[in-house]
Image 1 (cartoon, rainbow over the protein chains, first blue to last red):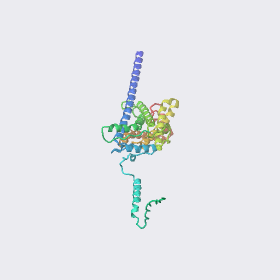
Image 2 (image 1 turned 90 degrees about the vertical axis):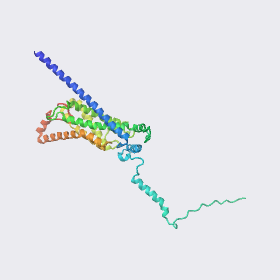
Image 3 (image 1 turned 45 degrees about the horizontal axis):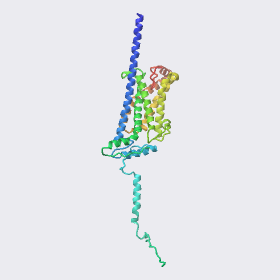
Image 4 (image 1 turned 90 degrees about the horizontal axis):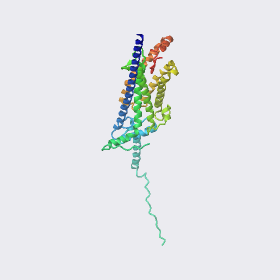
Length: 135
Length: 224
């Protein structure tokens, strides 16, 4: 009788161990599959963002995808965070610094018009070379 | 460094061109996806770890053994961190060296936030894998060390928000917040427990750390 109980108990322990192993393997496989699925979902989201041109780093849409990517490339290689401004399309308005430079250039071009006539020295007329005949 | 071909905005070859243009960024995309997965998995792992051996809490959560779930999530996190770093090595634009991704605060790209992430990654790796060497380390010493995992996890979360390229994206914030906030609440609850026990006196603190059901750790899954 004791022997029978011992065998029963042994069987019970084995069944429990088997069940635990099975449960463990199910949890592990589900975790692995879930992790891979999670990674795949994130990869797809980021990749689709990139393709749509809505990537926060690599570029915006409206035809400026490559400009944004190029800007980001420079920003990334220079070690600075590119941010959304790096993804500005090629046809975007120039930055204030460039505008100021442009205005300064335009002002420099306009200056000669405002100068009084008496203040300006007339440019010397080209003198025709004097040809002397030796004959 | 590869040159980028222009993607046309129309025509039948548009999609092919866009795919071609996206090609050089595949490593970068892979790294970002792995980093995001690492944050989510580590938060879930910390949450599961805090449920293991919690006072009065069931050992079985969601129909599975919490310890096994915690261990599997921790290993998945370490794999994701490894992919996150290794994929950067293939990026043609950042072009980091192994030292850049392994030694904190030396890289050119956002050195502070990247460095915080590297410290967090190494911490999680060392403390997580030390589980398999706990016999030689000593159970109580290992348990004490393992408590620091929470700190390194927080560094990882800070890295994802500070250096993450997608940190401004609502979808990322939601996805990260879902497992992170509960884990953070559990972590704060555990710390407040420990502090209150410590304030009650050294005897209470000693009994708390020696009791297997109360001396829980962030990633601990084993009885002492």
